[in-house]
Image (cartoon, rainbow, N blue to C red; front, side, top):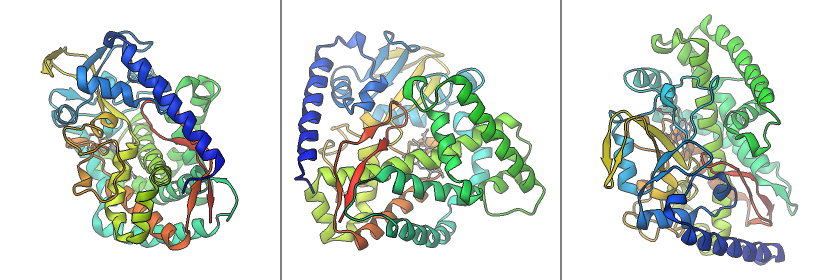
Length: 426
Ligand code: HEM
């Protein structure tokens, strides 16, 4: 799928960028490491930093960064330990929540991903009927019909942004269905998801005030929908499910906002970025694309592989509830502990040839991208379903989906994804 002049130039640039990053990562003293610097993610130069940490200091304390000190846990088994020890490592938003930086005051809305037991499970249970196998079978029919429509509307032989025309469009349509949100206003969901996760310098919003205004609009819109659902018969959408379950019916406004943003971001950014990542991965690995073409049944193992390869949420953070030992280090009560899924997914001690994209791995589902333990992604089967359907339908229609320029990556060490990916279909 390569061969255009743009792509080979881009490849040279990429190789040079990676070489420079490797030199920098190996010349920097470990005490100065800040693996969560968003620039590594925007430039796709994170790899040598984590490679060195895995080899030399797999549990690392960063005190030398413009953000508060944090531990990095970078090996697969250590991440698994933290993720499954929720009695020791808390997700509670009042302690700082689930991403590397504490949520700024006024933005620490409680959501069940940022709660500990027993509240977490009680609230999670209210939405889990959305993701049962039977309900997913029902959704599959709708997802396929919409996917076909979106793909049939794409231009041929012309460059367009895959992120906007396919990944965002399909995941936003899905989200509108999950909430039973006014379909024609669905792009508001995309916007709120972007605004909620954007870093100050990322260019998504011009000011804190703008961010506040937009999220207030989100809160007001959903408050209206909530009132409508609370006062009508139970229906099969996420809002109605929460409105008609005791554990969530009486949530305060902040908790409602927290859960909404969780579901909007969870259902939006992650699947969207994996969809885009799948096109990029298959372009960068034409032998794997040829394998897939020859045997489309490999979509079943390609999907979990691309979720590993992309790791659309690069990390989850916890806060230590007590002093504890990990990797020969003492983590103190109150410390921030970041589980770098993106690094665990490249741990050569657990995953064979982890830096290669291989669509027919024997055990493709052992990746960490959905987390483990009590917070393991509740929407994972839906995400896999969407990715499977989009590839079944793309293989049916297109000979090639050619990447014709560099992807523009998101400036964030939390959401690992793309702003744009120029492609051409033939
Ligand atoms: C939780 C990843 C798609 C909704 C999570 C967690 C991760 C994750 C890493 C936290 C796990 C932990 O802390 O141990 C992903 C990835 C996806 C994806 C990689 C796609 C490729 C979705 C979708 C939805 C969703 C489609 C919903 C529509 C949620 C929710 C939680 C969650 C509600 C919180 C679960 C809890 O706290 O119990 N996801 N997710 N995710 N995800 Fe996903």
